[in-house]
Amino acid sequence: MKNKFLPFLIVTTSIIFILRLFWVQIININDVKLSNKNSVEKIYNYPERGYIFDRNNKLLVENEPFYDLMIVPSKLKSIDTIEFCKILKIDKKLFIDKIKKAKNYSRIKPSVFLSQISKKDYAILQEKLWKYEGFSVTKKSNRNYLLNSASNILGYISEVNDYEIKDDSYYESGELIGRQGIEKAYEEKLRGVKGVSYFQKDNFNRITGRYKDGIYDTIFKPAKDINLFMIQFSSLLRILT
Image (cartoon, rainbow, N blue to C red):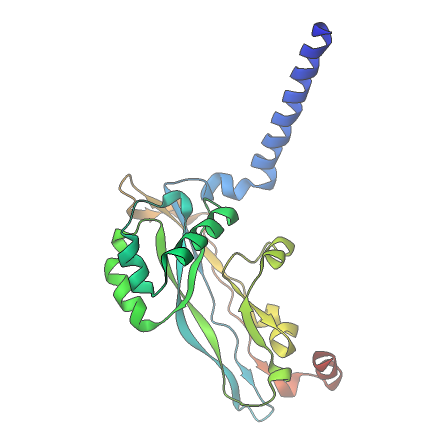
């Protein structure tokens, strides 16, 4: 029995090792090269979401800036949670819950800790952000609908959920996606394609320059505007249904 168990153990261990190596080097190669490096910081560059016009070229949907507070759990250090929560106007329970959620998503990838921070809170936070390692701020834009009607046609945007992240590798935690109406039907055109930049960091967690002279960086592709005049009647019926 012992003579059979040893070869079985060796074979099983080898299979597990090979499968893990395959995952690391082939399937998850980008994370291995970049995201898993504590000395490399990944920053996304988001194009402004496309505008929506009516058939007379009147603006129906525009953008307004907001700020997301991002977190990378593996980079977290001890902080003054009372001061931190006071700045963001959240309680300690919510702080702990969001830390857990971020760790469950990924310990090495950035995710949204708190979305749509006001300009006033951002201004206060920016002055003290250097004290909170593992946190950073990303500027994004939200939608401003200039009509009080036609919401079923225009739709809206909201944060992607866990199922959508698993279903589409383009999206990451905290990003926005079109819901209903034109926002959903023309999501790929309206969102554009985000770019990404990788930065080298030193032992003090300070950015020292582009990682590998930017060979892994990608430039974002601008979004496209939508004009209702260009949408065929059949497409409009499909949107409404």
